[in-house]
Length: 316
Image (cartoon, rainbow, N blue to C red; front, side, top):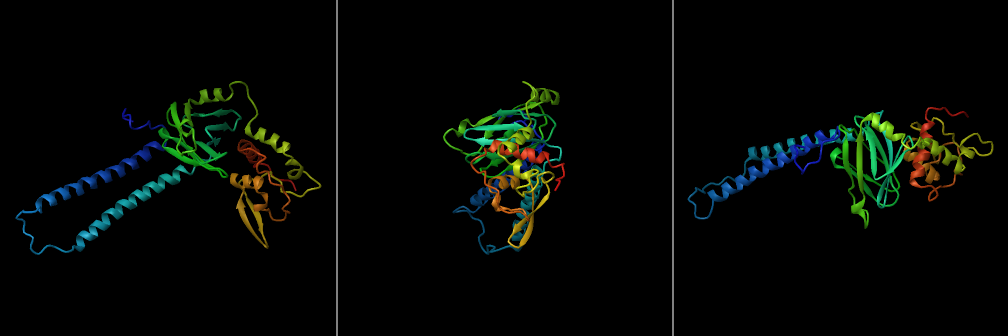
């Protein structure tokens, strides 16, 4: 930015908007620091000990000054709040056509896998001009995914999913950091984001031959862990079918009451690891827990497989 080394490149659609808010807040702080500083110096000199300034009948209060001193900071604060809130909600509302990438943080590396199946460590290859949504979790402690040139940062937490999206605006190679202290080798937990032209990205995806996609790997793991015996055509066990379930409301039995939750990635993850926490209405809580038996990377693949069934209606 302006070839000034203290500022990283503006390389995403968020960057210029976030910088504008940052510089506005900086300008407000500098302006009031100067105004208050000048007032302090002027008053200190004018009313210094020994000066012949008239000190009779000093004012004790001014309602006008009090109103101004309340109104101006209030208005400026609300402008900052509204501006920041708009940017915040935009940063956490990805477009529907965003490219989905899975990220697992672990001491001390980033494991990244694309929906098409290609995986990488400490590097993220993405096409320029395409919105990218990251679904992230941690295998051990809290990490934080930070790309300064994109002006985006999101904590990566064990036991849950967080998400982040951005749209790179120019090709290049940009630093990726972990911005949360995560142990002895925290300082080496970094990498690079490689923003490529779309054609070059497509070639990169297929380098070394086309392997199975995440959904295809998830289908294999679904069979390997014997999930199909209950969640497909089974005459012995009554379990919910998974076709068409992703993204839809699911009825949950709470004693005699029934509530609804959306079958998103967090719900599917909990259903695999803690199946008795939310039991689908009309079914018995007989599913065993797979906690400690399936890694975070494999969980993301199984979830990708279940998501791939979202366009298929269950046959009951």
